[in-house]
Length: 435
Image (cartoon, rainbow, N blue to C red; front, side, top):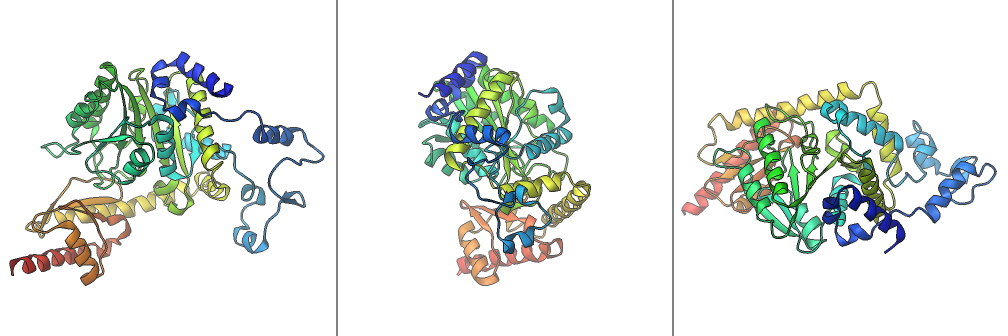
């Protein structure tokens, strides 16, 4: 084992041995190089005033070399903010701006100790970092039965973890905190669990209320008190898109210092929040009372980044930073929020009208991009294909009964027509089945 990895491990074990036990084999072995090309380049950048022949980019006339056909389309930005490598942790100004945004939107964080957000290549990369650092073969990853399919690829296929499922909703169609608690306590013999909390939920668009949030925290605490080390991951991909009386904050602050055996990890990003899906700018943030522990986790995270993508794309970080610091940012974001809320509300009004009750019910939703129908009479995949072939309508089939609808990408004026077409598709299949 490299001496730097040993030093980081010693720090983590000293500050919180439970967190050390959470680390995967890779998590224990990984480190961020303090010597070599990166450190020597950083030293040269500070001291080499005449010639700096260390960095692996090309310079011309004192700035990064670039092609005019590219720069002409990006002329609002300086070449130094586009073409140079971004630091592995991301642009410092962007990290600071995102941290400030987190505190403004979740004021409780101002009183807590949490790491500076580290830039990732959007949220999937952030989750992949979590998997690399904490998931070994046979470890349990706990998610609800209605989930984003990429979790299986990220944690199970890539890292060999075992997926543990619990029903998202209870009998009252609220968040199933009892199911979550039981799934956690079932890992007592393993002594470790990774719990992924994704709100607003993909695919259902559901966010728990305040009491449900307290029940979730209590479930994790009960697991920790039973001797289970818990990596509590809040996947906040759709953060801020809360349209009704639900939690309007991430559970990340609520998990701070609840128990030494719980490590809160927040994965979020500009991807959905700021409507820049193709920019691939996300963040990963840790919370813990110990600044030394946070620093060690940051170094291990940077080691994973260095070993995989080296660093994120610089231009998109610059664009997001420019937006966050622009005077027009909040007003423009509020405008888009109102559009999204209008679409969600129209979907709910339409479904509550009773017009389609013979064809489906729907799972509770109050946030995010999506909602799910529960079909009563036809198979979801059969309907999905029929809608594509006969009506040119795209939906997502999930199991036998569930059909996911992304209202986020449907203009409000077209929502009635969309659901009418889906209903027509159901009736077509019912007739075919009756023959």
